[in-house]
Length: 128
Image (tube, helix red, strand yellow):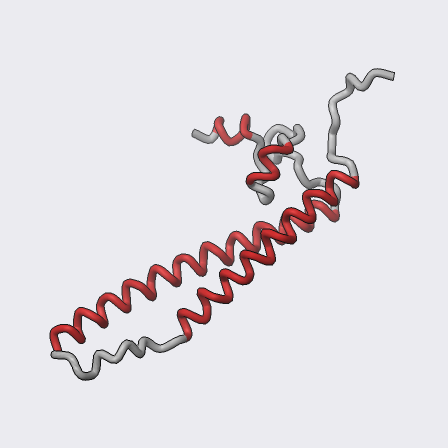
């Protein structure tokens, strides 16, 4: 029997494959977020007490900028984690891998590269 009907969803075994990929990415992302959070909670003890006031001011400005950048990275990482967790919910609902614009299956290669995506390449390209 030839399979000429287009698949409307990924099989349970395929969903398990994607789940494993997502869980691994989630583990790594949470570790990175934890590291960023630790960086933010550590006070800046670089020993600038014995340097001239000018250098202290420069150091403080640099530390503030670095903290802002770390905050942005942490926020981006948190959003990534939220997106991965939402993808796990879609796997449980068996709606994972279906483009929210076209209703067609998103290519496996795309899902492996960007496992939290909800758009096919076709739909993504239409956004631009």
